[in-house]
Amino acid sequence: MAAKIKKGDRVVVLTGKDKGRTGEVAKVLPTENRVVVTGINMVQRHTRPSQGDPQGGIKNKEASIHASNVAIADANGKATRVGFRMDGDKKVRFAKTTGDVI
Image (cartoon, rainbow, N blue to C red):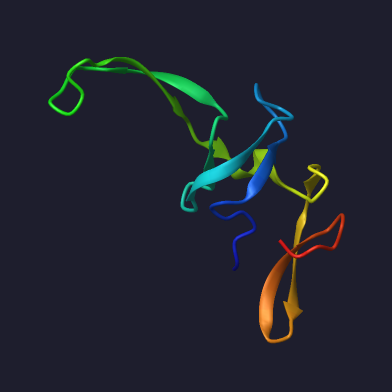
């Protein structure tokens, strides 16, 4: 089955502490059904000093969010569902609200 959300897609967060915010998908974790969105679901990670990072300390990073809690943003910036259709001999994703190819 083709993926509805892919790396580089612009998405809107539907639920949680970042509800309504938009961001770009940085990473997709298909086995866990989760995505990592830049600037969304920020958490603090306490790191020990190491050779690569001699300072250590508290670092901010993005945590994954469940794929059902995000939706593709259409051309207007609103959340939309994703459909699939054949465009010639190629299968493409399209926004259900506007009908535009994603």
